Every structure is written in C-alpha cells, then in structure tokens.
Length: 274
Image (cartoon, rainbow, N blue to C red; front, top):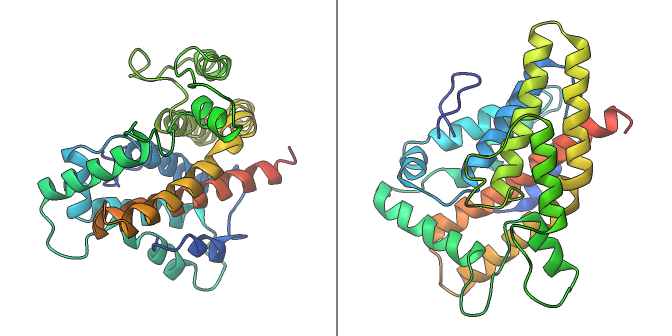
C-alpha cells in the first residue's frame, strides 16, 4: 500500500462534479513533477481498486490514503489556477474517516461494498471490474462474458508482455482488471519519468507513446463509464441501506479520483496531438 516512487506514504467529495473545477489545470507530458505525480496516482488507483485488505483499512484510518491522494493530485494539477489546492482537498475528502472508525470495522465495510459493486450477487454483477466483461455487458451482448480468454483480454496481456511486464496475479485474475490496467499505466509513466530523470529523451518519448497508445486503445474505451457506473451504484446501494456512510464516501471518492486521473491522461494525449 505504500507509495514508493517518491517516498511518500500511500495512499470526492461525494460529488463527481468536483472534478470539473480541476479541468484545464493539467500540465503536459515531459514535466518531471507532473509525470511522477501521474505515475504515482495510477499506482495509488491500482491499490485502491483492488479487494480491500487490512493494510488499506489502516492507511485510510491513519489518513495516509487521503494525504497521498492529495499529494499526487497536486503534482498532477497545475498550480496556476486559483483554488486548485482547495479543489483537490475537497475531491479527496472521502478517502478519510469522519470519526474514530476502527480499522477492522472499516475493512469489513469496504469489503462488503466492494463485493456488492464488483462481485456476482444473486442478481448478477453490478459493475464488472474487467475491461472485456464490462464492454460485453455495456454492448448488450447476450450470454456470460469470458473473463480470461476473450480477444480483448489477450490483447491487453500481449501489450503488457511487449513492455516486459505481467501482473503478479496474472494466473488468477484477468490482465484487463481495472487494478492491473492502472498498475500497468503506472509502470509505463514511471518508466518515462525515469528516462526523463536520466536525460534520455528518446527513451522517454518511447514510453510516452506506449502509455498514450494504451490509454487510447483500452483505458479510454471503458474506464470513464466504469467510474460513472461505480458512482451510480454506490448511490443506489447507500439509498437501499446496503453500505454505510464511510464506504459510500470512499467509493464515491474513488470514482471522482478516477475521473481526475482520466482527465489528466486525456490532457497529456491531447498535448501530444495524438
């Protein structure tokens, strides 16, 4: 759970509209601070979208998740706009606790919410956390989606292999899970930052192109709708009394933070004129 690339502790306001106040404040690829911040933000999302564990719960109760999310966002967002710092803090409020929640109780609440959101219940899966399965359902294709051997999942796996990496859970989870795609983006953008630090512009451009290609071919094709559906389902579950306020705040913040990172990735792509 700890954020290693800048030696800081790991890491919505419940309103997704908070992201809108940050639009236009992003800086293009090639700026070291923003590039590292974006790599770290993607790494953070890779951790936060996984099934919650005790380490995550401890990081939430101690305030580390909120602090790290704010740190990444401040690195990503330009400092030139008025009120950017306040907007970032509001966006990340849901990653913190509102009272004296115990880590064990929080972990149970987050696990329940995660399962209701992303795991098959009696009525089916509310929101598939895998690219191929999510697109299958969104397109209205009949039948159950194939999780491991779909053509789309295999393309994601091939792209990762070509970059020299595979997820640690590749044998037990499809490579196109939301957490694996965020982790892969963190690797690509982190490799770009490393090349920039070493003054290797040619290598930096290569990694930049790889991340942009992955965003265009995969991330942008489903994650905006994935986070929209997550936010909608969180509200529905909360209204039905199936999740508590802390879980609602956390997964509301997760959806809003996902939109923030996606906006930053799209801005990079636009500045590259791709």
